[in-house]
Length: 287
Image 1: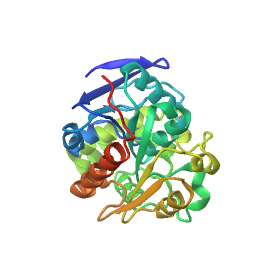
Image 2: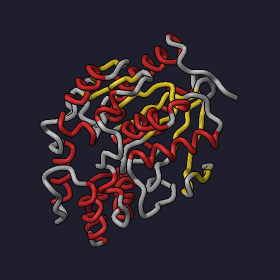
Image 3: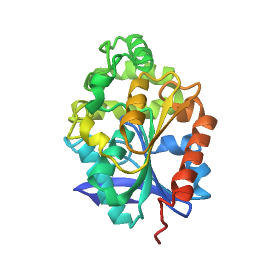
Image 4: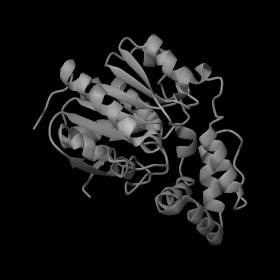
């Protein structure tokens, strides 16, 4: 897997296909493998040049002690975009990856032709979410960690999650790995190293991406939010306040649409990419 260094951090990336540029940005605690596992890369590579990469601190990329806000991650994207010589790209971002993608649209508008969000929560829109932190997915996580004696907070707290994973004895971690299976095993092993970084707090920082700044985004934005998402109020806010935003619900999903409803999510991404890169001629190909 190739790598390059931007902002002093080595990032690992992969590319497939040819055509207008699409960059897939994973969530915090995830890595680029999720896009291949879900089949999205193969589904898009026939029509687009698809770039995936591991965010700093994730996957095979370097893990610096600090610098994990959406602004930091957006600057990493800018460096990656420049180093790879990409054209204006549509960014598809899941969860925190969507926050990074929208922040990149603000900080590096020349590099971003459009953004497709997948169930993203924005710290700058926290006031819009009456049920912030009360995710069913987090409740499930809390229950599972409790089975091995690790106590998580009642609401989302990544720092607490990372520390709980780091403090687990090896035999308890093996128990968790057995519960989560082969794919979850890789996810679990990413958590403990992040306990030694500022990631847990940084990803919940507004970092300049306020409601006013979000509302200033001029690139087209697609808000794909899951049917059972805790963030549907955010989807409605985006549709009402962005100058060019299309909202759509992905059925039978509750925050991990690419895995909960792979076919539905893939179809939605392909349809909206066609509209962004063909119908609106937003994207260009650079060789």
